[in-house]
Amino acid sequence: MRTPVPAALAALVLAVPVVLADDSPARAASVFVETNPSTVRAGDEIGIRASCDDNLKAATVTSAPTGAIIVSPRYGFLTATARVPTTTDPDDYEVSLECPDGKTATTTLHVVLKVEPARGPATGGGGTAGGGPAPILIGGGLTALAAGLALSVLALRRRGLR
Image (tube, rainbow, N blue to C red; front, side, top):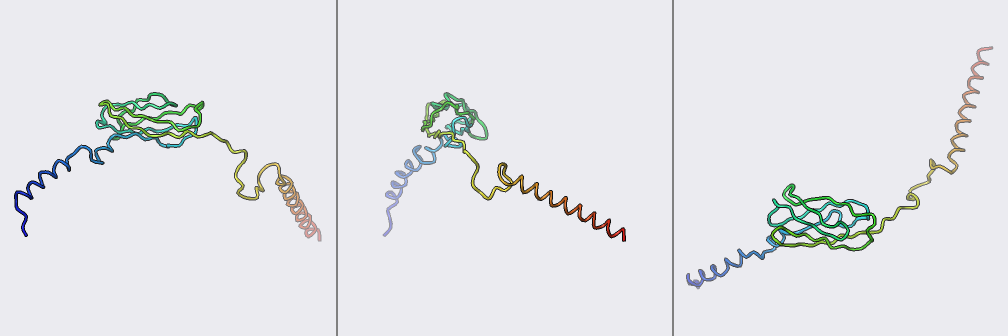
């Protein structure tokens, strides 16, 4: 059975506003903010990348550890770098973007405790590491080499005397 033309035309007219709506996922994703890395130790540097509807104007990114930072247009995005102060306590901090047109976006920056290892990884025997038997072994090897050299010189001299 054939669909009448007015009914098909009415369905098409009703579908067009749904397709052209500004609430589409691609449109909603145009305003964002991200930090790289998203998990950082206090005292390290982070990169901030953001996007507003108009990436030709600077915007402001704010977080508790770094304060307000101006992100400027670069490579089609709004970018900046910041250093997380060494006095920052380990926690999760909200990073907020405020665009010039009033739109906002947020992300989370994870600051972790800065821990220094007490010693290196256990990756082998450590024969060349200081404080062990290495100096004695090297000294013994050099002594044996010198003794061998002295004996060979002595053997060559004895041959020449006969």
